[in-house]
Length: 92
Image (cartoon, rainbow, N blue to C red; front, side, top):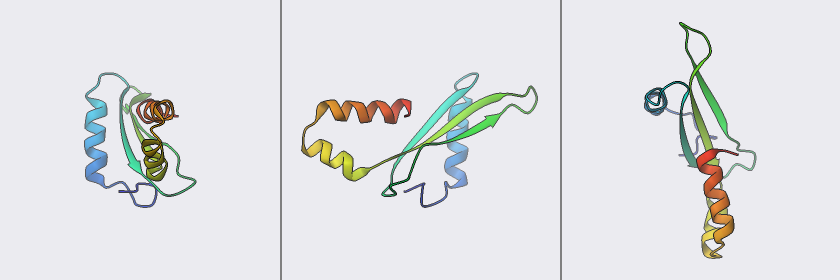
């Protein structure tokens, strides 16, 4: 599901929020998704602690270019593959 082109469903947001909130103070969760949009970039949703103020959790929405991944696999470019994997796990 291309979350750049289509909205994040509330059920997915709820699941990501619960996952992030279960990881202690300022927990994080990320979802990666394929996108064909050239301008797609990471988006961060912050969940604030309304009682104490400040951040409570973060959700990262990380797009990736499926065609680029397919080329990396076809070319067996391990260095580029590792670089892309790190960016998907840890963000840009």
